[in-house]
Image 1 (cartoon, rainbow over the protein chains, first blue to last red):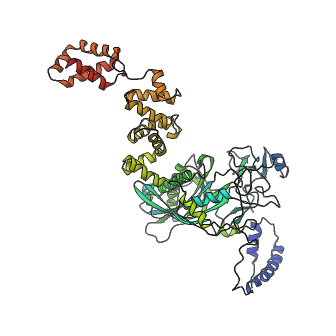
Image 2 (image 1 turned 120 degrees about the horizontal axis):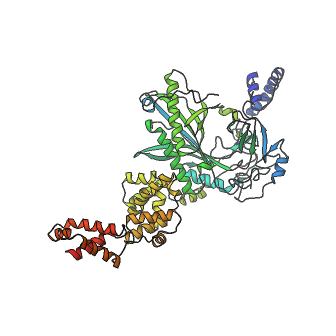
Length: 99
Length: 501
């Protein structure tokens, strides 16, 4: 039985930069505990003779040669930014932003 | 924020009577690949902002990364050079956090499966060897660059907003992490510096990075803790971030030791935190408190398949490693017949490569060493530049030593020829010719000067003929004076002896 405490949920929400109200904390903590329980049932499967799955794709060493390819034009890049200034992405004040 | 002004410090010698330090270093090296780690964008330093980005390094939806083969090879070679075990199988991982300089919301890094583990690097300080254990070498990507606007000094504190350039985001970055290094005592700051220096030289020998610290190719995070002498447990460490010169590495450790000693003396606890180093004052100040590793919510990167280096390929890379700095020093010391101390003078002056190249260009090891550590070191010091920054090449130095050895110039004239070379007047032989610096052979002018000296001092000639041969020195001096130092003293003496005795 896994349970997710309100504090753990508040911590996760902060790391994900999600604003969560007190009521939502109670609601989601309960719901997520149920989800965790459901997922935990995977651990009950008999896998003693099954090799661990390490990756969804059974391949290794997919690489590209060290060759330069054209980049995007800057105006195209910055066109997707909420704000730009001096050919750079403009972002809000960094310090003091964290709650 | 804690300001540095209020930090109390304990004198270095005094703190050593009560505390012992443990240090550790995490060093980030930007690889010198042509393209980025997971996309084909160029890595040119100093390019116009945001001209080297694409959907992959900007983290746009639907883009897929593919690992750069040259970066993986470079990382394996670094691991081999540090005596590491190369993993037979490893994965990339996502390190999740929000900061404007990572466009994706995570940094692609490695976590519990680094490419290289368990190596070591021996460094020497004042004739003593310290073994630095390497915990891991892993491959990740660099972040973008923030420019802070609206603050008083371009710093993040007090800034109104920031501007981000993502050209650097995604450049392959290798992180080299040491295990904690105990037992260095008073030498801790110097061991830290020697380690980064040796590491830089290895990276240079491998040719995997330009390792220009001033361009941020190599940046060290310096961990320092202090504990009362004899304590079984180590103290709480601080991590001074992004120290980017060799001198600063040493200063950062020294400052943290002095600061932490004062904290402990006052009966308080050292906080585990990141600190920023200030080049101008040589001090550190508190940054954000260290996030727990679990806060990064690492998980295996699903968009990249595992790396599984072929053992035969790794063996081939190991066999093809170049001569590493320590081996090179040992070889050259033997070839040049120097003591370890003499060798360390050359190394400490940053003259090893220069002396080696000068010898290769035909100078004797003794002459090459004499010029680089003597006259040239003095000029570099006066000009406030590194030896390698002087406007003279090893080949030109070799030519100068040849001119002296052949008797074309004496030491004093050679120094004048050096002035000319450094002033951009050409090679030493050209300068000697243009400035008329060659010592005189038995020219008419010199014969005249010798005969004038003999004629002008009959009393001295009398003494010499009477058996006081050392009185000849006065005549030599007179000739040298008459020729303003351009005559060769040995030649003058021989000419005088032929005429007087």
